[in-house]
Image (cartoon, rainbow, N blue to C red; front, side):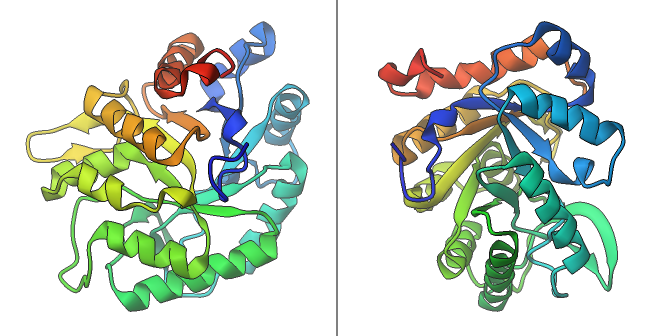
Length: 282
């Protein structure tokens, strides 16, 4: 049963990101994995090895697409060529939902290739929500937007980050990809209580959750996805599951990637926070 109206896939349990260093292990060992998350842009091609790999994965596993370049917060219109190629991939993977980030990253057709935080203003929220609705209508698949980590703040902001997130998703009537590591990273960089953020998220809109590790430096924390998940982030995850119910969860590990088994074991720690009757099934 869905945990909420945006989470129609609570049976997905725990997944991991599909990464090149693990291809050989996956194809030779055929491990039991609930699902893989793919970065959409890595497979938005007309042919060749990426699609050959993807089709082999699709023969055995469920796949959910995660994007990094729709840039709902950018001022210019959505890129129709990008959306057309994305829709073609959506039809190939049959992803049950699609995610991307609540951020900006392009100006006048030039791309930063980074997830740049937005000024938390009502005007920015209105523009982002409108673009999310347009993308959802074109792609014909449910959308959820992810909260990003941040390292700087805009003086023009009119609300907190969590108030901004709520404003956008209510206006767009979309789901949330709740990244609890990003909440923790931003809380440490900007000096707020991460549970204030988390407890303000509309639980009924949480469609998916990300967990990850990060790197701590002298003056800030960087969202590097190259370490195991730390205890304070697991505590946030436990609270998120308490709020939203069983929710598809994805471990991100994108740099200094260890063996498949190590990544998978770290991801499966999330089962400890599921209701007892679901722990064995996930």
